[in-house]
Each structure stands twice: as C-alpha cells, then as structure tokens.
Amino acid sequence: MANEGLEALTYAVRPAVVARYLGELSLVLAAVAIAPALVGVWFAEYDIASRYLAVALILAGMGGLLTRLPAPARIQTNEALVVTAAAYLLASAVMAYPMTSAGLAWTDAVFESVSGITTTGLSMIADVASLPRTLVFVRSWLQWCGGLGIVVLSIALLMGNDVAARRLIDPVPTGEHLATTTRAFARRVAGTYVTLTLLAVAALAALGLGAFDAVNHALAGISTGGFSPHAQSLAAIEGWPARTAITTIGLVGAISLPLVGALARREWQRVLGDTELRALLVMTALICGALALLGLVIDGSASVADRLLLGVSAQSTTGFAAAPPGELDAASKLVLMVAMATGGSVGSTAGGIKLLRLLVLVGLLGLLLRRAAMPSRAVAQLSVHGRPVSGDQALAMLAVVMLFPIAALVSWLPFLAAGLDPLDSLFDVVSALGTVGLSTGVTSPHLAPALKAVLGIDMLLGRVEFFAVLVLIYPATWFARRHTEQ
Image 1 (cartoon, one colour):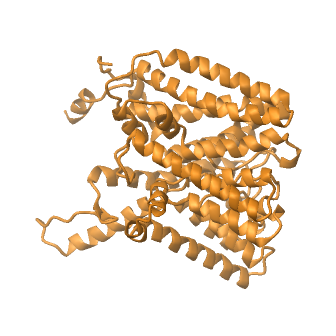
Image 2 (cartoon, rainbow, N blue to C red):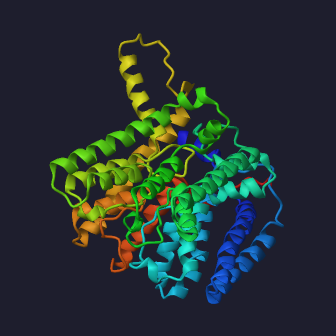
Image 3 (cartoon, rainbow, N blue to C red):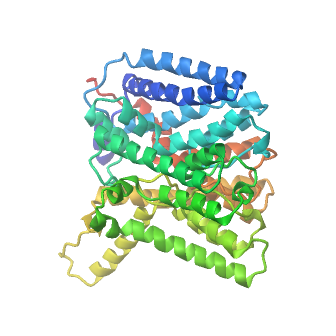
C-alpha cells in the first residue's frame, strides 16, 4: 500500500518543459561558443574559429525554436535535475567537435570537453604547447563557464520565471545556498565570479605572467579547473610568487561565492563565523602539514614547497601541480586523495563531497551521541552554521557522502581488471569524481577507451553531484504518469 501511495504521487518529466529550458541553455551555450570564435579570429586560426561559429549558430537556432514552447507555471524537481544533467551532456558534446581540428580522436576530444566543462582538468593531450592557441584558451574558458555553471548563467542572463529559477539553482532542497535563490541571487554570484576573475588576471600580470598565461591561469584557477597552458603545469612557471598566487586563486575559488560577496561587503561577522570556511582552512593546513612531514621523513623527488602547493591545489580541487603526483610516495598519494575527496565549500566552484556535508555528518553523529543520554521523548535539532538542518536536507547531503565512495569503488574495479597499478588507478578515479585533475599518469591518450569512458562518467557525476545523472537514468523519470498542466 505504501508503494502504491508513492506511485500515485510520482510524476514523470514533461518533455516539452525539459525542451523549453534546454532551449534557454542552448542560447547560453551559443554565447559561450562565440568567445572561442573571436579568439580564433584574433590568432588567425580561422578553421577553428569557423567551427565554433558553426556551433554557436546551430545552438542559437535550436535555442530559438525550443524557447517558443510555452513556459510552465512551475517546474518539477526531476525536471530541473534532468535539465541540469542534460546541460552538461549537451555542452560536452557540442564543444568536442571543434577540438578535433587539432587532430584529436573523437573520443579524446569528448574527454577533453567533458573535463573542461566539469572543471576537472584531466587531459588526453600530452603536449599542450603543440595545440593551437585558440584551443589552449578554450580549455580554460570551458572550465570558467562550467565553474559558474551553465544553469546559473542561464538564470542570471535569460530566465524570467523566478519559481523555475529557484528550482533550477537548487533542485534538491538542501539549504545549501546562503541567499534567496532567485535570478537576482544568480546575478550577484555571477558578478562576484567575474570580479574575482578580473582581479586574478591583474594580480598574475603584475607578477610577470604574459597576458595569455595570466588569462588562462585566472580562468582555470578561479573555476578550480586546473587546465594549464603548459604541460608541466606550475613547474613551467618561473618564480614562487607566481606559483603561489595561482594556487591561492584556486583556494579562493573553493570558498562559497556568496561568502566572498559578503567579504566584499565587509560583513565580517558572517565571514568570520562561517563554519565551513574555517573547516576549509583547517583541512588545507592539515593536508599541507601531513605532506610536508612526509616530505621530510621520506626522501622524495618533490620539495616541501612543491608538496605544500600540491596540498592546497588538491584541497581546493583545482588540480595545478608543482610536481608530478605520480612520483610521490604511497602515503602522500593517500593524503592527496583525502583532500580531493573532501573538497571545498558548497556554493563554490570546487568539487569533492564538500565540507558542509561532512560537517552535517559530524553533527549527526554528535546528535546521536547526545540523544543516547537524553530521555526518549526529548527533542534535539541538528544544526550547522547555527541554522537548523531538516531531515530531508540531511538525507540529501548524506546521500552524496555515501555515493562518492561507492562510485569510486565501482569505477576502480575496471582499472584493477585491466591490470593497472591499484593505488595510481584509485588516485585518478578519486581525482575524476572530485573534479580535481591531478593524475599519477594513468590518465593518458594510451588508456583504453572503456576506461576513458569510466573517467568521463565520473567527472560528470562529480560535477552534478550524482543526483542529476541518477534521475536522468531513473525509469520513473520518464515513464510514470505526467502532470497535464503546463
């Protein structure tokens, strides 16, 4: 009877609603494709420019047709999640085509596109310097756009339905956003993101980086993406001030964007009282301390300074590397995996499980221990940041905490079956799920296509935090009864 009651309340997505909002997203993606087309013209790489122009025109045409569909009065949670997942899939597919102009196989071009739009940074390109400059820019540009989020971009620029906007930004009511989730909120976040990017470009230029390097590192840094215009990543950057600045930009990207906005408005009490920010700084210090200690105890090839930058980069999930992670000792790799899995703040561009969810888990364990000493009728409320956390919110957060290690284990098995190094394979799997981009060398053009697909799926799962993809493939999403209202 209980299942029958649930089925009576279950509604499938309405294809016209999904198509309508995918049309909105297509218009945003068309605008995203215009920037590489202009850069291609600037560098006189006209073949690449023409490909991105063709992509922009196709997306604009598709968006123009789909946005003629009537906008619904309200959008269901599963519809918002399907649109979110479909947005990243669509972006990954259409942005792969121009990359084939550099001689990349289609599978590698799709992998690179997925890695860019999900802000991961794992790459199938052995020598970045051999790429046309337009495609070097595109890798960073896709990460920047993916970091802000295609959905947030759409809400900030196009959508007028505030109810739908709130549902698209926060489809699962987890209470993770620190401001009202409206179009105005999305615009404030986008404004903060753009301002941080411009400041990052100016800071790197002042430290001696050329304009092209400064722009690419700023785009990939603030988005915690980690695509570098150099094959050696940070090792190719001369001077520790510049390397440290690039790594710090990634750490700023791992802080909640609304909180950064509060800092700009000098809301000191809110910033200093933020539990998740304190957790990020403490975790970063612990990871860096552990790596430095291991560097002193174990005679490794990476210097202590290199290890410190790696620690910050892993915790922020940026993925810039001052030293090859594959050359580290096993203990240091495990420490980096912990950092990549825990990640940054909710509301930031960082990946990983997110520290707020881990704080909820710790708070729940503490609540259970306190309840053991309370009378059975006593009421105790779980709270984080001084705010109560409802049962539904806690359930949604804890589901991600559980899904991350399960997905890592399932993804790891094919690598073990292929006979690859167990620890190095697990490292790259965790890096993909955490959308980090650090690699021990397992991720390469020589990797089997099936294993490339596993990492690609992991990157998508990590970016949309599992639920959107799971809802997309859930049969009831498509085959249950539907609302008749639009």
